[in-house]
Length: 530
Image 1 (cartoon, rainbow, N blue to C red):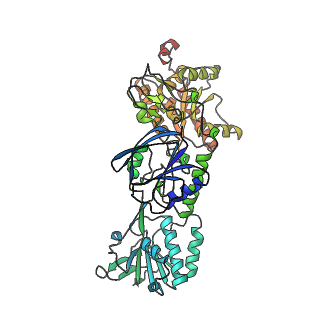
Image 2: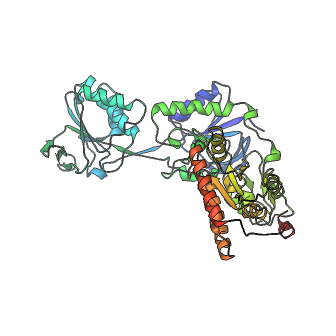
């Protein structure tokens, strides 16, 4: 076991993280593909420049990394990995039909120039900022534009115009900043239906903008001294390579963190691998600082909060494993080691049960989800038959969402079906067809699987696997002559107590209309499950 932490990055964010962790006596390695660092790093840091990560094996506490340095193999074993690469910024000149020159510059060029107060030609000039006209902008770019506008007005007595479509002022403090820029004299021109005509006189000439005001319908013409184009912020260039090497989920834009509430703020789908700053999202400087603090909290939190008893992790019986590696392909946490027979890395396993649900050899078991345990639980909770038909409804509830919604519904006094019984599962993706048939065999008149909403599943795709599973079983029942309406899958958040009551009561009415289940299966006919 090692206590080293690897920071991957070459820029302000990586340096800020290194300083924060070193202040807490962390043992650091900082690695970059570049041959030199943009900024110096603190002492007591092992520096690896000009290296490319080739592979990563193991799990949290024992990541075995192979790196390539000038054609030579370098190995390091670390406890945690932090990816803090810098995002890529590309000026949107071409989107506006502009050619960069002294009169046409990018936002980054302007920011760099404003940091040098010896630029007298900015004084008393007319600036036009183009943002979000050709493609959707973001709050970080708008904040930079507004701050540049304030500085131009206060220090250079310049006149600024900001041409935009949607103003992204929902970020922290942006509404106030917007008001300050307007009070200082900035003119905002918003376009909804039309677009300004942008014409550059020759390739290095000034820009002329003509447009029609959406409200008054009047024609206007702007001839700025300097035109500033906004920029597109993209994921770091090596993002796709790092995602493949570390087995990380990405968001729709390619950043190294899926859009999942359970990843807030610096976590990934792999325990012990974290992302910060521009590697995980388009962020303001304040948000990057927050990420640095959250990383320290994640790395230095007490060990008893980081470990779960290995007895509750997935177990693979090598005698039953066929080596198909289906579990390896579906595991959301990269907790499966592929070999002739698969094995589980206990520290990486999150007990979701997805691997066990897809294992056709029944080689994988998880304590609490075995078929014997589920069957015993169902039998103990099977209600006694009454003279009048009271539907026996069995609900498999995700412990992070629907199970909590059920508790809340009970506490708030919502009326629930009298024949409703709950089985709490780590993830709805761990509910297999065996579990469904166990419920039906034990006289359930209807079976619900209540999942997280899409994008909110801790197992990333566990809710999607559950949908596939239930749809498949529903089709089977329909072919066999049974009502597929006896199965229902719905998403629920943990605070949706009212919706929990509505879903279960509506389902009860459906089952009352269908009548008692005709699905009969003798226990000995189902012995292959155990």
